Amino acid sequence: MHIPRHCSLTAERKQQGFTLLEIVLSTGLAALMMIAITASLLQFNQHKLLAQVVVQSQSLGQLAVAQVLTDWRGSCGAGVTSGTAQTIKLMRLYQGRCVQYDYAYNSGGHSLTRRRSGGRNSGFLAQVESMDFYFGVDSDRDCRIDQWRRSYQASALTALHQVKVSLQLRIPSSRQLRAGKSNLWLWHQDDDVVLHPVNFIWRLANVCT
Image (tube, rainbow, N blue to C red):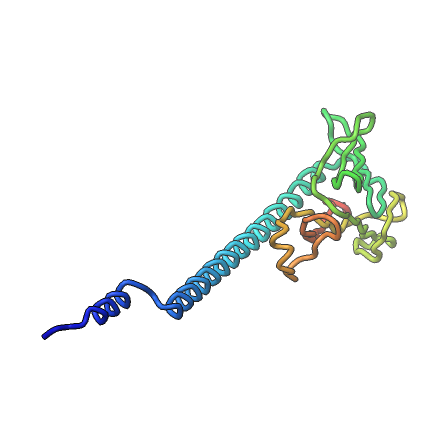
């Protein structure tokens, strides 16, 4: 049986090429796959950044509390002599002597500074956005706190029992995470940092003895 030449050529073209519809469908499928892969990678990266901020917040918060309490534990003599919302003066041992130390918040350097009487300021606690002190005093000498004051001055009429410390720490973060508009933290208005609150109480020992 004789097969016309033009018929064999038509069949050969169908086997070797792709139709326009097949090309469009393949391109669309590849694009969808790339979008899905990209979205998965972005989501994974965002979760990774979130985890990093959580770990940094917890570790830096614990470190800040431990550093302050360890330093103030060595108070001597009159203990705390005075304080305001952002400063505190207390007596600490230095080379066997009871010496006054001044602690103050440095807004320009985002830090808590310490200065020994007669010495120079030195950085004590870094990455601090804000700090507030509250002084729990006993004004009737019954060994119970009856007032929380924003300032304190040592006197024979009052006894200081506790100091509440409220800090906001600066946790560096990624612009990519901020772009995600996460509501888990308070973001700084101008800087790419998360503001992490840390609150703790310093209890003065042997106040009523």
